[in-house]
Length: 439
Ligand SMILES: Cc1cc2nc3c(=O)[nH]c(=O)nc-3n(C[C@H](O)[C@H](O)[C@H](O)COP(=O)(O)OP(=O)(O)OC[C@H]3O[C@@H](n4cnc5c(N)ncnc54)[C@H](O)[C@@H]3O)c2cc1C
Image 1 (cartoon, helix red, strand yellow):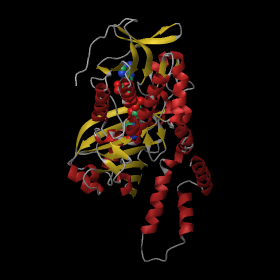
Image 2 (cartoon, protein in one colour):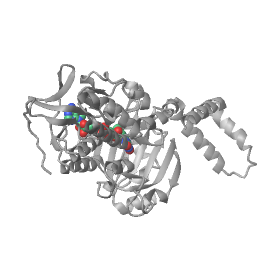
Image 3 (cartoon, helix red, strand yellow):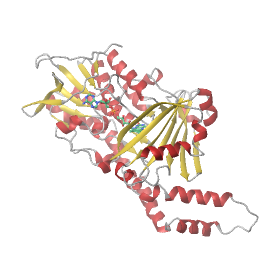
């Protein structure tokens, strides 16, 4: 794949139909559809290759690729089909793992529900597909500024170069500099984002399959609670073909108040007696950190467009965190498709923005985010991150301890353990109520 790396001097007459800033999943999906429909598209990416600067836990829901083109998942750069969904709670050296195994997630005749992915490989593949459709992908170039004429965005500036287009699409990720320059978002607020750190640990495929009880090509996705020293956040673990992606997500403000650094907390997670055996003998081949939006539906900016300008993916705040799953890559792809459809369908640049909002509803992105908004209330509950895993482990310890003494009443024991963890039944009733509302 050849990519232009140097300046593209263009005049206002010699413009593209669309310039997309960022070759993540949102930008490349958008470019794919636009180029397929005959639009001239330039994608500008600051990384040396697409995905070079991107960090993700590592799971993609397949429906998004199918929306891009039917059957695309069969040739995509994917790792393992997820058939085991796991939730793990850590309390000191103790651990509880809930393992939901569903073979129908990988049933013959329909695409598997989700795959684990490695972003370096996946992003490069998707950008390549956009190029196959006719888009131009220029890597190693950072866009510094937008060009505005009479209230309309008409192009971008990168270093010495000016490049023009009918529409500029901001696909530059969380804390979008482009959206800030367009005056559509303000500087990011610390409480609306978390910091994710992640390692990719190389291991033979057979070892991964034995440790996670998987067959060839099958994968596991695990969310981990109780691994952040009480900081809002959690851990994740995904099995790739011959590596494991392991990481933690922390709210930066709270992390700053702890005695341990996030790096030290993450090292403790790796050494936990129930985690270490899963990664033992592996070699760390990648280490990265990235911001992830935590605000959900209520974090979406009031306006996602201006004349000649649209925002997609993380730039538009399209991430759903339910606590048991995190979705951003599929929403990035879907919003890229919606933006492309709006640009193709609009008569004149002024019509593209309102049409984009309609397409976001039609493609079910905004309704999905709205439907899952209540999870943000649950995740705000501070004691979820330490006291709940401690209490759950205490309850399990109680259940599985046999000493020969006459066992007490389970109900009384649970109430005693709730109190000994500085909690009350009322707090659980309130959380249950929030949970019902979220569902
Ligand atoms: C730790 C962590 C775990 C996650 N786990 C998951 C998961 O398992 N599943 C899931 O669906 N989502 C997950 N997410 C969220 C997901 O990664 C994002 O939602 C997704 O990457 C958004 O895609 P995007 O294309 O909008 O932005 P990005 O992937 O961030 O891509 C933006 C691109 O723009 C480029 N860029 C930025 N500024 C400029 C500029 N000025 N000029 C040129 N190029 C520029 C960047 O280099 C980058 O390539 C996770 C996020 C984190 C941080």
